[in-house]
Amino acid sequence: MNDKRMLIILSGPSGCGKGTMLAEVVKRTACQVSVSATTRQPRGGEIDGVNYHFFTREHFEQCIAEDAMFEYAPYCDNYYGTLRSELEAIWAQGKHVVLEIEVQGALKVMAEHPEAITIFTMPPTIAELRRRLEKRGTEEPEVIEKRIARAIEEIPFADRYQYIVWNDKLEDAVDDFCAIVQAEENRTKYSKERIGALITSC
Ligand code: 5GP
Image (cartoon, rainbow, N blue to C red; front, top):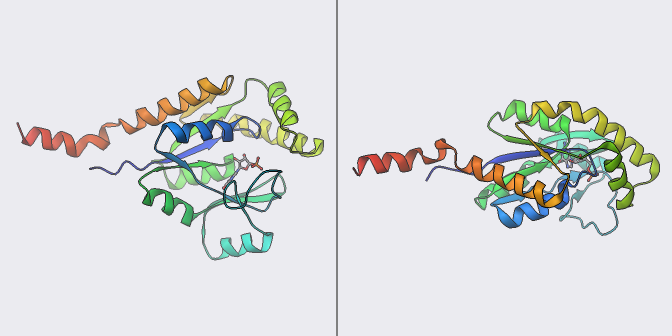
C-alpha cells in the first residue's frame, strides 16, 4: 500500500467558521486536527489538551528553543504553534493531519513541505465576519478589531493556497472540504503499486 497520510493546511480569518467546519470534516473523512499550543487565555468552555495546549510564554519559548515546534507564529499578541509530537501521533494512527493555522505559519510549512494540501476558507463578506465574531461573544471589542484588521491583511495571501472554500453556508463548506480530501486521496501517485500489481497479474 502506498502511504496516503497527508498534511493539510487550513487558514482563514478568525471567526470564519474553521473550527465548526473541521468538527464535521473529521466525522466524514480520515482527517484529524492537530491540537496547537498557544499562550492566549482559554475562552469559556475550552479545555486544555482538547482545544489547545495552553502554555505560558516561558514554556512556549522553551519548546521553541528545544525544537519541539514544527511551526509557530505570533498572532494578535500571542504565540501559536504546532508541536512535532502532535503530527507524529496523528500519522501513527494512519490519519491525515489538518493544521488549522494562520498565514505566516502556513507559508513556512508550504516552503518546507511542498507536498502539503493547502486550503484557505473565506467569509462571505467582512461585515458578516464581524457579525460572526460579535455573535461568538468570546472577544472584547478591541480584540475583534485586531482580528478584523488581521483578516484584511491575510485575505490577499489566499492566492498562495491551492484551494479556496467559501464559507457562505456551513454545509456547503464542509462538502467542499470533504470533496478536496477525497480528490487528493485519489491522486495517481497513491495507486502506483496497485496498478503495477494489476499489470503483472495480466
Ligand atoms: P484563535 O485564537 O481564534 O483560536 O486562533 C487565532 C489564529 O491562530 C487563527 O487564525 C488560527 O488558525 C491560528 N492558529 C491556531 N493554531 C495555530 C498554530 O499552531 N500555528 C499557527 N501558526 N497558527 C495557529
